[in-house]
Each structure stands twice: as C-alpha cells, then as structure tokens.
Length: 304
Image 1: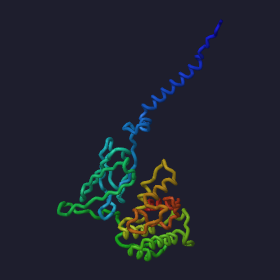
Image 2 (image 1 turned 45 degrees about the vertical axis):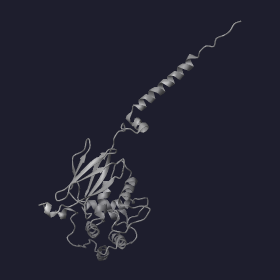
Image 3 (image 1 turned 180 degrees about the vertical axis):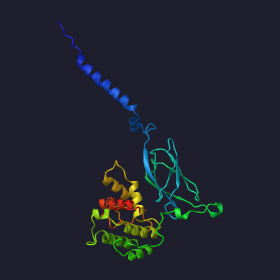
Image 4 (image 1 turned 135 degrees about the vertical axis):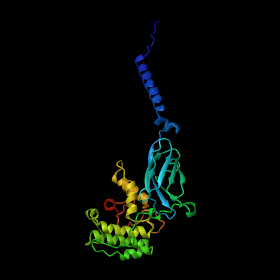
C-alpha cells in the first residue's frame, strides 16, 4: 500500500511570515514615534507645540495699558515683550505646561499669572494691573499712558460736512443701541451719500481719515476705551494668520468681539470691540463680511 505525503506549501507560508514581519516592524516603529505614543498613551511623550495667545493688560478702570512689560517663565521662553497702545501683546507659549506670566509697569503693582492651555484653552486673556498708592511710590502715576491719546475735546470735524452732534449726545448718555444705529447712518452719509442702507468696499477703502478719527474718538472716549474702531482694529490685527482662510480669520474676529447668533449686547459690559457693529453686514456665524475688514484696514492706514 502506497501513500503520498502532502508537501508543505512553503511559498504560501513564506508570504504569511513576511506579512507578519512587516506588521511587527510597523507597530514597533509606530510605538516608538512620539506622536503615535502620544495618541496611544496620552503621556509626557506628546510633543509640545507653541500656541499664539493674545494678552490684554488693563488698568483697574478697564483702560488699555501701554508699555506694560510681559515676562515669561518656561523652558525656552522668549525675551520680555511690551504691550502696544491698546494694551495688546501676542505671545507664544507651550500648549500643555503651566506658564507663569509676570506683568509689570512703573507706577503699578507687579502681578504674576499662570496660564495652562490644556486646562483652559482660551486664546485671549485680559489681566488688570493695580496702581501703586501714592504713599508707596515716589513715581507719579502716568495716567495718560493708560489709554490711547484721545482728542482733547469732542472734536466733531468732518471732511464732507457730516454733523456728528447726534452721535455725540447718544454716546454721552450711554444709549449704545441708538448710537450704534446712528453710526451706521453717518458712515453711509460719508461713504455713499446717495444711499442710506448700503456702501461699497471701494468707498470704505477711501473713507476720510478725519471722519474715522471723529467717530472713533466719540466711541472710545464715552465708552472708557471699550468700544470703537481703534479697539476693533487692534483685535483685527491680532487674528491675522497667513495659514488661515479670510473667512476663518473673520470668524475668529467675531468670536473675539462677541458677535454670535445669540444676538448683540448693547451694554457697557459687552466684550471689548463689540460696538459699533450694525453698519457691518454680519453673517451671524460670528464673523463679518469683507467690508468690515476693509474699513478696519483703513483705520490702520489712517493711524487712528
């Protein structure tokens, strides 16, 4: 009786062993790569990233504080920075660790704040500084530095002869909603006298600087530098990012100033830069259409 012994299919098994070997190699490489280890284990192997954070330094009266020194304490921290005329400074900090930020200015108490983006991911932080009591400091408080230099009085000049007395009266009285609506009317009068409900971007790009200064001065002064074009322009500059689309940038701006589908806040407690707004064509996902950015760029060009 004869029998046949089945032969082993070495070709098939060779293929299986090869696949297993490649899989083991890939898993080994993956689990030794910091990024993959971070995904699997959520451990300290996760690579740190530096993230842009906007700091706003204010006085106790919520006025922007120019020239405040901002120092950082973390590995690889950059050189100290200073706030601009709107109290703004953009810093880059790690996205996971505690970062100690020290704020100081002559005539004010030095303050330390801790930021941890992992626990609180807000990208804009507002910090107050307290003035030193006069008995504790021989240095007089430079109160004129606590806010952008305003026009000494309500200068209502207009290149095209627009009357700003109604806007002035509304803002003095704190009628924010009515003042917002009046701002729309005067902007239309200046940029497009033929219509009172629409203005094109070319007209906004050429908006008279003198009128921009007058409108901004009235809003800034009577809101204690909480509202106005100059505040909005500073926030607009802070969200510019070449890696983002224009639409995304406009959306980020809307988030910063508190524009959302929940509606507007016509009180002095609204977020900084929230007003004026009604002249802008909002898309109500928290942003503004192109015309708003054009006017804010004009504000910068005019040095407002």
